[in-house]
Image 1 (cartoon, rainbow, N blue to C red):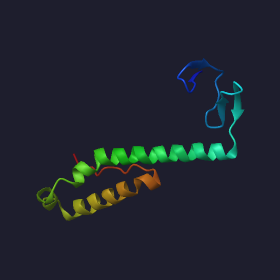
Image 2 (image 1 turned 90 degrees about the horizontal axis):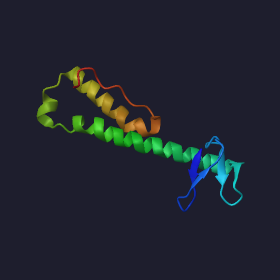
Image 3 (image 1 turned 30 degrees about the horizontal axis):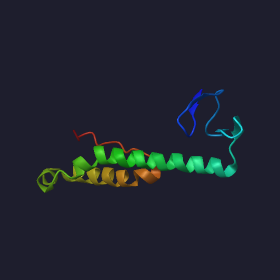
Image 4 (image 1 turned 180 degrees about the vertical axis):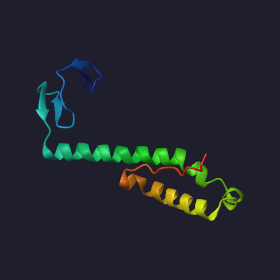
Length: 107
């Protein structure tokens, strides 16, 4: 496995699980993460998932929701209900970590 030090120099080290261990540049050894480091790592992963979901929501959901009143007025009541439910699920996506299924009738 190749990793890079603070000066961007490539260092070859044996493969290790980065969610439980880290490379200590001072001692040149692979060490187990402390509980604090492990929790911090997991928090960073969760934060990254939320950011990715927000970006995905911005690309997939908002262009449809922001189509305008004329478009929304053409929808059937059932479609309006499904659209509101889908939008609400997208708003909750960063917390639930679930990508909502787009209604079948949406193109």
